[in-house]
Length: 375
Image (cartoon, rainbow, N blue to C red; front, side, top):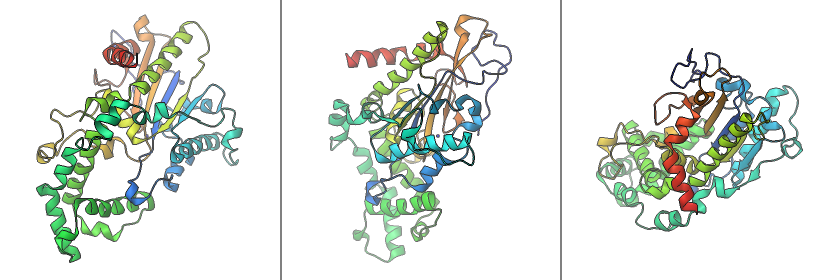
């Protein structure tokens, strides 16, 4: 899933939350993402550290909007969805149990199935949309040439220098090593640090410059498979993008009719592969030039750094506020976004808050394109 809440005294003609924003936003949508470990390491289950994120005393984002979430996800009407992968189902359960313990300190949490909200519902069409998009599967997933730049970088000078250095350190023939084996060694180091807090002996094989090269190799894969490399990467997330705006629209309509908001909280548990295409569709972390196998040095200060965008337990939050003292109807409903518990400025304005109308107008072409593609 750090940064203080934004308050702008006096709305004037610009959209922004009131000096004291409402304590409870109407909707909290969290595509909650637990990054998948490489299959080569066999780390497919939820690690204890990942589960502890859900069990910790304050749920992610509590520091920003603690009273906003409250106990509402535990009540009937909360929308709780998950991918079918066990680690995501376990993440949803851990989050709900952690939230229950936060509001009932000292008491053991009930089984999620016995909670008022019920267990998370599996919906792979939303949370694993990439498995259901035929064009993505054909053009990228099953296309042997789609990751050309990844394979080219593996045989490029930066990676070859690392292979030679590691071979010399291990005193093995250079021909016995390749980029994939180097990645396995690097992931062994990084996952031991991240999950176990242990420094693996493999960490001594690499220095900071090696780490930067290997980070770029991973970013190339994410860029060309989940990010801006191909338009279908981000477009495949259309179904989730529409779903978010449909629920924001519904909440506003119910509020305007003085009706209770039927789904005041929506929690979604997915993957890094769920979140990266969605953020790309929204225009975040886009560099002027594409990431390629041949511009590593030029991309040293790139925006697209997948390890920073979707680390362990990464999350994206949409907060919809109803401002009762707004000066104009347009300013009545406002939105704020958080990425990994930090305020995320809006792509269209670089401001920390936006009138909902402005936000929807900015993405109208994309929403229309998503609808047309579906029909």
